[in-house]
Every structure is written in C-alpha cells, then in structure tokens.
Image (cartoon, rainbow, N blue to C red):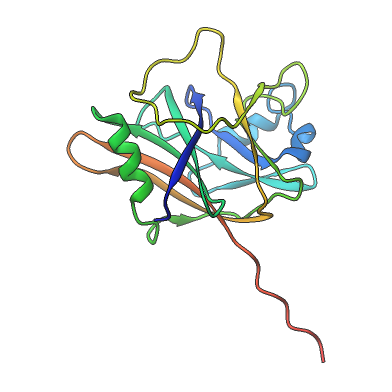
Amino acid sequence: MREPWVHLGRLWTNGDPFLAVDASLRDAWRGFSGDQYDEVVDLGPETTGIPVGAGRAVLIGADGVVRDDSWMEVFQADDGAIAVVQASGPDYPRVLTDALRYPDADDEDGDPLIVHSGELALFSAACDGTGPHSQPLAPARPGSVPSSHGRPSRDGDPGLMLTTTCTTFAFKVRWHTLLDDENCFARWLLIPHEPRDQPTPE
C-alpha cells in the first residue's frame, strides 16, 4: 500500500453509514427531512453508491462486526488517496497502521466517485447535507494518529470536509478483516484514478 498516510480527522458513527460526496451536491441530500435515509437502510453491503442530485455518493461504513458505535479514522496519502479505517484491538495505533498497509488486491470494487468541486464532504447519511438538520463539517486537520479508540464527545461529532485535486476516484471496500486473535479492521479506500483517454474518431 502507498505511504506515508496522514491522519486528517475522525468520524463517529452509531452504526449509520456515511456519505462521501462532492461538496457541491450536499444540498440535494435529505437524509433526515426526506425519505432518502430510508433508501440507505435497506441496502446490502454489495451496494457501494447512491444517487445524490445530479451525481453520486459512495457509502462508507460502518462494519458492526468490527465495532458497534465506533470511530472511523480518516487518512490521506501523498498521491491524494483517502482511507477510512474502522479498527478494534488493544494496540489501536498499530491496528490502524497495519490496516493502512494491508494489500487491497482482494478488496471489493465499488462505484467510482467524481469530485469536480475540489471539496469532498463526509457526513452521516442519516442527516441532511445542508440546513438545520445537517451535520456540521470540520475542516481536515493533519495530526497524529489517536493513541486509543476513546469515546465520542458530549457535544456531538462533526463530519469532515476535505480538499482534493483529484476529480475521479476508484473505490475499494474491505469488510471485517482479522489481523490476529485480538485485532481487526474494516477499510474504505478512495484511490485517484484518471479515466483512459477515449480514442479519437478517424
């Protein structure tokens, strides 16, 4: 796997999946005030994307086998790749490191993600994308890897807003994966991908 990875923030989930979507499409998502979250609840793990306005979002987490209520840690690599990792084990930082290094050849291929605006929003699918029922989005803050899983804050935890120069991402999903008897993880990868040039008609 690519390195180095930089920790950008963390997302708290009560079991609800998150959307990763071009921030310019947030207005179109009404997970709380509309019926859109109901569409997500009944989806199986084989479904990795969902329409949002004129575009699509990919679905991230959560893997209830790794943990129920849980943090999902967000990382970015030098090449623009983004990883979201849900981890469990007594040595939390080591599990995260091992999860990031774990090969992705056998990961499930998901829907591609297009981000034209240069901003990628990650927020709970149970919320609206904007407005009074939306989840506030914190800017990415590069920093050290958390030393332990810990608990959510008392005031509620925000989603994340990431900047990116990549417009097209391939999406890969790895569900509950055992590292040993005590440590496991799930992982969602967004990998920069430039579509092949179309042949020029003769």
